[in-house]
Length: 354
Figure 1 (cartoon, helix red, strand yellow):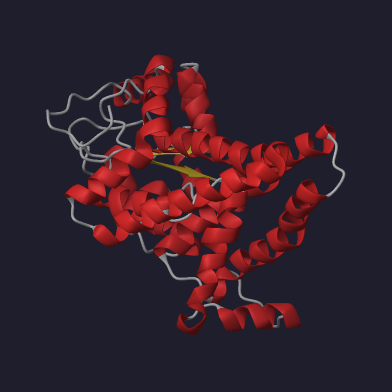
Figure 2 (figure 1 turned 180 degrees about the vertical axis):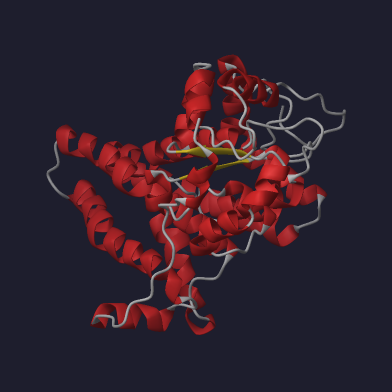
């Protein structure tokens, strides 16, 4: 258990303006709306100079299975998580100035497929559905009706989401008469898989490695991450951000992935800039305390998911940030966490995939 004073020692990134910028940074700043998003542009340049040439070489060069096999873990461990959260942030807030908005298609249609993100689907799911339904019964990715420390429950959730999400999301948009988002989903998915089919005719081994495996890995990581983000739900207030999601602080994941761990703050203020997330938490930690928010320190969402799958509540309790005073015992925190992972009955007629 982390002591209450830990909330005042945040190590996650905040904005630190520079006195001067090099030539490249000045050019990149000229393209974007907010100078705080310069790290996004650094990532885009890095991925363009490293991942794109590697993909080209895998397709046209004399590449052995060893080289091809190393590409996937290299992509996953050094780039994929950062891209997923770059895409998440640029979906909520525009990255490029209005006159350069066309460059967003480079992120979505060129870089996205290299990191397992099919064009447009993530935007439609996250912005057009998830933040509208807020993990309640109509949310297609809702965790409410699952036992959230159960491997069996997780597998059911994974299989239904992995194989049915695109179809369920399309039906959701059709029911809501959100035709523009529906067309974006259909066009993006069809274009991606048609291109994958054509690429298979050129080099099926390279296509598996470059496009198919990243989709499988990316969607698995996102499903596990969403499960962890919405694993600890207060059944008396599942519609409250403090009662339906968690925050993780002071972890490597936040430093790599643009403070994505501040998920309570994100659901409270979806347009809040990623560099302001630690400040929002610190400035409102009394509110987090009074609402009995679940906060962990030093672990990320995938670690939370893994600990739940092994029912290691003892380790989760060690990373739990106790905001209340007097502090609860280790056993009381374990009981709190266990109580928040219980299956919550929902009514019939749900749009959810379960």
